[in-house]
Image (cartoon, rainbow, N blue to C red; front, top):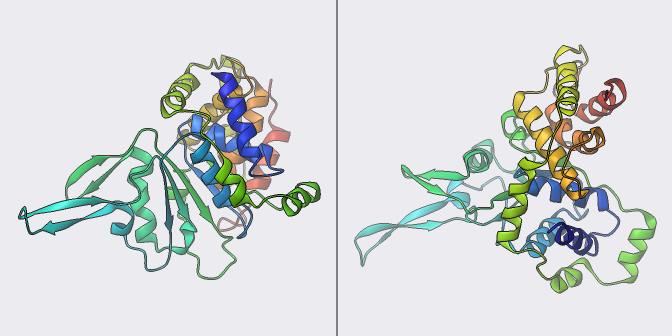
Length: 305
């Protein structure tokens, strides 16, 4: 089963060139049953990564293009009156897929953004008074453009907290970009991708993550990290218990990808920036994006032992 994970990582890295760390974090996010937010400039491979993950893991895939006129019903689905039966028939929206790409989520209004909240947290949606379960597994990848770009609506903290990780792909290294220019396009590589995992295998792997052993020393290390954010004058607010649970789950998933059945401090350190940077704000700039720098300070200032 662990060999399958290695094959999945290799297959995705053949499509998204030069980004092995980001790919590994994205797979860890899926294994930990979290949701992923990718913030970057257009054209960096955000959509390519989501499609590659869906194909390699054999998941049904839907893309929702978020725009300022998008309505919640466009995401969740609507009930339409059927004349023949004389009753309303529910037509499910694109949210009813195993992997959903919410593309440019911060271009939609807060009302449409909030339509994802229940789905991401509860794995279900409530429409017309009826609760409808979403597929299992269910995974949301949301992309957003930098807030400095025009036509964007800032995601509120309550919605940011629903994402287990936030990644930024960044520009590729020159060698990787040369391979991209000299070889096939990302679309051509995507078309050649074959599923490496089945849905049942993915669910089984997700079930292994909580069984990865985390010693009391590792838990104490996580507690020291989150406590530092709550006590530090540099942070506008501290990390929540949901963040500490997410950090532990992500570290367990990372350990599984490292072919270990136990967590070590290096696993926590590997996932911490992706897990906490979008949850932190600098006290002197609570509306800014200083979370990444604060996460790096945590790694250097809080001892692992």
